[in-house]
Length: 186
Image (cartoon, rainbow, N blue to C red; front, side, top):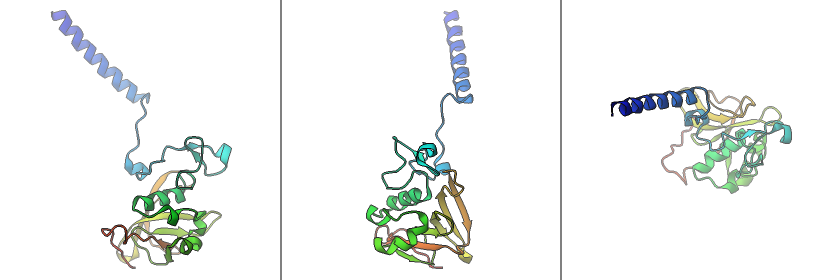
């Protein structure tokens, strides 16, 4: 009976050691925390730029998400963010590259202006494609915090805080959908 108890304890220790070893060497992949992905559901799309060109990540054999934009790009992340707040696909879909979101906003029932607001899309029209980010907060001294994907061209999530100089803002009709989101005018 004593031998069985010793073997049982040894088995438990070996099992724990092997489990720790498997995790340590990476045999079991760990999922990134939401803070590392912004909660974006398509953070795990894989690089397919060899097939579809620069800034391409794929899932299920395609580089386009159900939102109509390239996975892990700023436009897809922003579309996902506003969709999660109740903005319809008719409003965020088909706005083109980030550079053109401001130009196309009015035809989709969205307002573009120079006033940052929580829930708005910050638009930078510079460069070939432009860049957009989701406004998370607007604070004193006209400081904004944004969340975004692919700012560095690597398809990753990031956050930044700064002034909204040279940015335009697309205001999504969030107040009619979510009354708990404050509208802050700068």
